[in-house]
Image 1 (cartoon, rainbow, N blue to C red):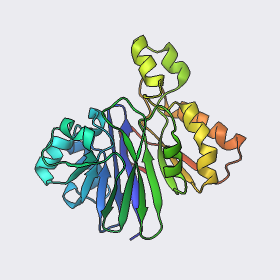
Image 2: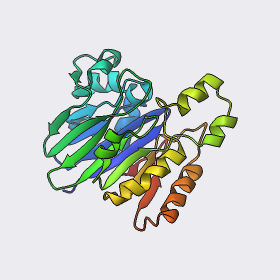
Image 3: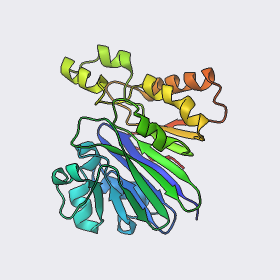
Image 4: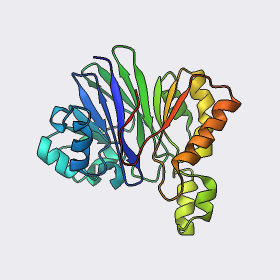
Length: 253
C-alpha cells in the first residue's frame, strides 16, 4: 500500500494529521477530542487502536487536548520534545531532544525547530522507505533556515497560513494578542506562507495544504487567494494548493 496522509482537522481550535502505509500508522498532534479523532479515522477505515505513535509539535491545547483520553483508552505511545512533556497531562510520554529522529516501521520522522511562543515547538519531516517525503510545518512566526532545509525535497507539505494581516489588524483581538500572533514567535501570515511557495516548488514540492487557518483572522478564500497569486506570479505550474478544513478531512498525500 502506498503512503497516505491526511489532515483530519486543522485550526486554532484543534489540529491533528494522520499518516499510514497500511502497516504503520501515526498521528502528528492530537487536538480536539478523542471522539473527534476516532470519528475522523473511522471515515478513513482506520482506528486509534492501530496507531503506532502520536508525535506532538508543542504543548498548546489545540494540539494536545485529546491526549489524556486517547492515551488512556488506546495506550498509544506519545513522543514529544522534552520541554513540552511535563505539560501534556499524560503519563509515560517519551521525551526527546528538540531535534530528534524516530523510526516507525518504514517511516523515518525527523523534527525541526519552529519559532512559536511555547516551551518548545517543532515541525516534522516524514520520509518513507518507498521514497515518499512529506512534512508538517505549522505554528511558527517566521520561516527559519532550518525549516527551509527540512522542507526541501518534500513532495507534499502541510504549511501554516494562519492569518490575513488586514483582518488581524482590524479584528477584535486585544492589541497584545495581535502583536503576539504577528511576532516572530507567533504564526505565519498568508503573505509569509505565499513567499515560501517558490522555494518549495523549486525543491520538489508539488502539493501544499494550507493549515491552521484562523477562524477569526482569516478565511479559506483569503489564504487561497494569496497562495494563488504567488503561483501565478512565479509560474508554479503543477503546484496543487488546497486548504485544510477546521472540521473535515483533507488529503495531504
